[in-house]
Image (cartoon, rainbow, N blue to C red; front, side, top):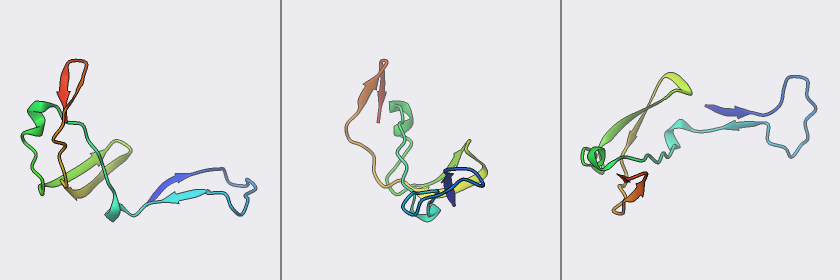
Length: 80
């Protein structure tokens, strides 16, 4: 999957510059912030489907590998 392209058609390129960034969708890692009422619905090992506005009509399969035991508070909301 192509993540980004730097430059335009016809641009001069150097040998050591990065012009295309590719990622393996089977090796993605994602961190999400969940509030305290949502985090209780999530369990380690649970299968998940991830969708993003940047990749319309695409769903990436995943698995919950960890949940932080420590919360943070942002604007009065407890998050994990």
